[in-house]
Every structure is written in structure tokens, then in C-alpha cells.
Amino acid sequence: MSTAERRGLLIILSSPSGAGKSTLAKRLMAWDETLTFSVSATTRRPRAGETDGKDYFFVTEEAFRKSVADGEMLEHAHVFGNFYGSPKPPVETAINAGRDVLFDIDWQGAQQIRNSALGPYTLSIFILPPSIPELHRRLVSRGQDDAETIAKRMQKSWDEISHWDGYDYVLINDDLDTTEAKLKTIIAAERLKFAQQPRLSDHVRSLQTEFEELP
Ligand code: ADP
Ligand code: 5GP
Image 1 (cartoon, rainbow, N blue to C red):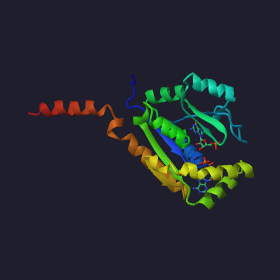
Image 2 (image 1 turned 45 degrees about the horizontal axis):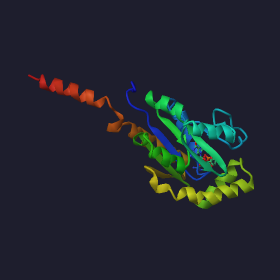
Image 3 (image 1 turned 90 degrees about the horizontal axis):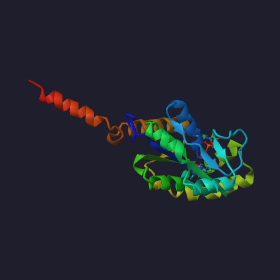
Image 4 (image 1 turned 30 degrees about the vertical axis):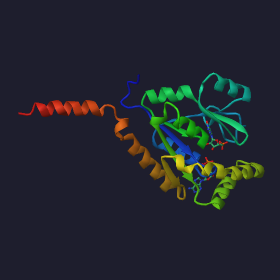
């Protein structure tokens, strides 16, 4: 049982590749140091500049399959020919301590978490690009994938976008600062929801006692 003031939220960001969710996730992490980023495990190779244990846990397919079989993944999916999954223990530790966890995962992972026992504690946000040519421009400007990989990601983008309406919030990431501000507003409001504040009942009970003691 948690002793925290409130239970942490599972905040899920999804989008087609290149729409900007990693950039936005980094900005949110810089904004609120109490947020915990869920570092996924993946069988894909590291990109230039990515650090093992920080961006991803880069694992072999054998190790990945064993983690899934041992029930250590909160969710997992096959994306662009590689396996990705969210390790369960760090998420449970964080939310039981009242810390929110940020996920950068695809629609399959979002759906699995929503349908799990943690579903009621989930806040899911889908990020749309302003246009398809702009999505392509961003994938190219990121400069981290070769032409073949970019073509594969573009082909798959509709698959991801087609799940947009299963999310709690949907934002068009046109101007980065504006989208960041909207995300912060959403998170701040979700944290104030009644269900997120179990101690409110105690407060109302003490108000009732004070009320009954009125002369
Ligand atoms: P994703 O994580 O969704 O695959 P990234 O966060 O890596 O996408 O963003 C892809 C590229 O687009 C990066 O080069 C990033 O700097 C850029 N980008 C992200 N959001 C915007 C935006 N609103 N306007 C212009 N460029 C953006
Ligand atoms: P990338 O290879 O660009 O880092 O990620 C490719 C896609 O996999 C992105 O849509 C990203 O959100 C998704 N992804 C990353 N980690 C996970 C994870 O743990 N689970 C799921 N389901 N998707 C993930």
C-alpha cells in the first residue's frame, strides 16, 4: 500500500515517429525533476548520441524475450522490426512513491497499459504533426536515420496516426513552445483531479468536525 500523498500517474506520449514526442518528453523532464522517465528496453541498435540505461536499455532479442516471459514488462510491442518494452519494477516503485512516470511508447503499448490494472492511473496524450510533408522534413532534419529507415517510418506513420482517437488528449505539434505549454497545463490539471488526491477526504472530514463544533 502506498504511503504517498497521492498515487503517481502514468503519462503516455505517443505519435508517429518524427512528430516530436522525444523532444517534448525531454522538455517535460527538464520542467519537473520529480517526473520519472520510463527507460524502455529495445532490441534496436543505439543511434549516435544515445546512452544505454538513459535513452534505452539496449538488449539482445534473447534477453528481451526472457524479460517478457518472466513477466517483467508492463507492456511490449514489435515496432519497425524491433522489440520494445517498458520494464515494470521502476514504474511500480515510482507510482507507489507518488511520482509520475513519463512514457514515450507507441499505440500498442498505450493500449496495453490502459487495459491493465494500472489503467485508471493513466493519462494518455497523442501528438499529431501539422502535416505529412512536415513530418518527413522532421525525420530528415533529425539526421539520425538513413533514407531507407526514414521511408519505413513514413510508411508506418499512418498506422500510428490511425489510433489517435483512443487517447485522452490529442495535440497538434506545430509550434514546439505552444505544445510544451499545453502539455504542462494538461499534467497540472490531471494532478489536481479528485481521484488523484486521496487526502482530500481527510480534509473534508476535519472541515465537518469544525463545522459541527460551531457555536
Ligand atoms: P519523435 O520522438 O516523435 O520521433 P523527435 O522528438 O525526435 O520525434 O523530433 C523529430 C525532429 O523534429 C527533431 O529534429 C526535433 O528537433 C524536430 N521537432 C520536434 N518538434 C518540432 C516542432 N514543433 N517544430 C519543428 N521541429 C520540431
Ligand atoms: P525509436 O526507435 O524511434 O526510438 O522508437 C520507435 C517507436 O517505438 C516510437 O513510436 C516509440 O514511441 C516506440 N517505443 C519506444 N519504446 C517503447 C516501449 O517500451 N514500448 C512500446 N510499445 N513502444 C515503444
